[in-house]
Image (cartoon, rainbow, N blue to C red; front, side):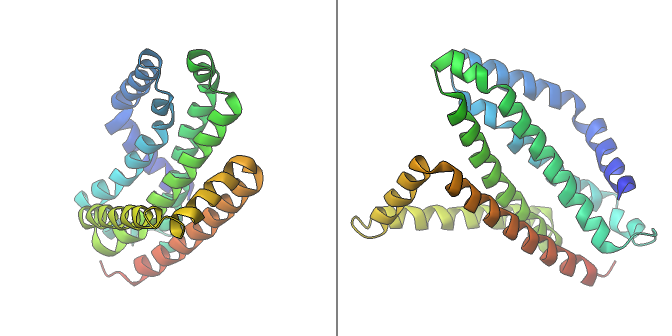
Length: 215
């Protein structure tokens, strides 16, 4: 597992090191200059895409053929990708925590609200990338990206349709959002638990797909 993580980290360092510092500085400057604290939560998004780009690198150099000869199980290969994804998104979340006082000084946004907003964005990104991984193993990086765009479109359409129902689905959405505002701790606890379960399911599905692949 450690060797697999080192391999991916070395690729990230070689390919994205300059981009990493450039994006970090750019988003920080834009967030301060434009007083848009949403830039402080985008690092997790970028770091997640760095990890997903490793699948394209692996396909280009036919890494899976070589990995099949290593004394590691295919489940370990999949687990390393999920672990690296978690570490990178966690790094982005830490960055948003560090910049929470900056958001307070810029626009007076309470630090607690900044932390909760960052946590919600982080959980959404974890779900997004966790679902993308099994799709990538099944269809390849390019088709997986298209599939995720389709899923996002369907999800957005369902939310808009529910919101337009007035006293029906719209009222349910208002109740849910209101409950999240008044009781953030139980709300975020449920969302976090649901995210963990979904990640476990995506990991199991990814392991199943990868174990059945022929190289």
